[in-house]
Length: 154
Image (tube, rainbow, N blue to C red):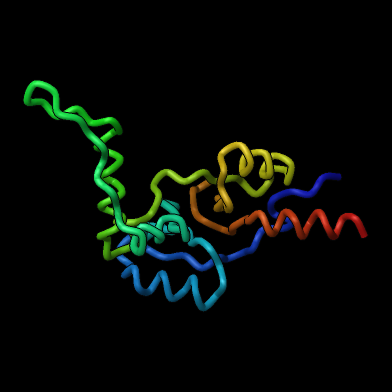
């Protein structure tokens, strides 16, 4: 019988709220040696995820989008909305300002094969695991899947 997400996920993951100061989230990631945290509302429902990738903007800064001037008009060569989003992440002070919204999640009854496919196809490193009410009950990382693969070879 194939293993399910529930068989290998980390249960009761550490979560943060949108109003959590960014410094606190960074400290949690560093001290626990983890690369991302689910962001939940007051009812424990998933509203976002904050990862090392989101936090990199704090150090790297943001380059304004390239543009050209044509007949007194500015024509952006890249979407200026992307610049606005990236600037917001670079200057954010709370988790809610920096987190990725609408994260991809999975239910605990899905197979590891399904989870691995989602992670690969969507280029994500972790999947919050949600019960039917939308509350976060676990987190599945690429490392969890690799460890399950290694254990099945024994």
